[in-house]
Image (cartoon, rainbow, N blue to C red; front, side, top):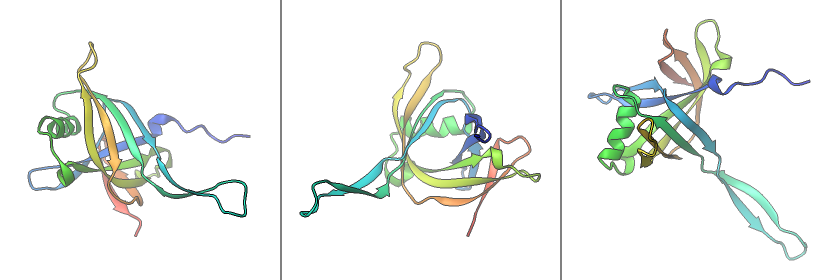
Length: 165
């Protein structure tokens, strides 16, 4: 028998937005119509001379997140991503932390399991809808996974992340 179905809305992404003093606040990524992760495994394939088949091992992962969102004015996450695109920000200046929070693990004090990782944010398309102004692109891995806990704010719009170390 199968267990409880995990709903998509129970895996919530929070985006690290820096303020003028470079303090990072993790804000809920609202208005996103697409946010899927490709694991992009790196394979090592070889054929030994004494075998008639190839062997393959996974030697690394290079995850990326495909995203799309309807642009809302005043949303700090949207404003940051638009700024990266409009100003054509390059290199490490375009790296942001994303925390994926598993809401289904929330305890009575509002703490959930979470995974944080840095990504290079690359906006690839904008304005390809006649209904709402949209942006889409890819966030590519720029660091190791950090396992931890996320404490939700009262309205669940921000979190505090604490790593498990």
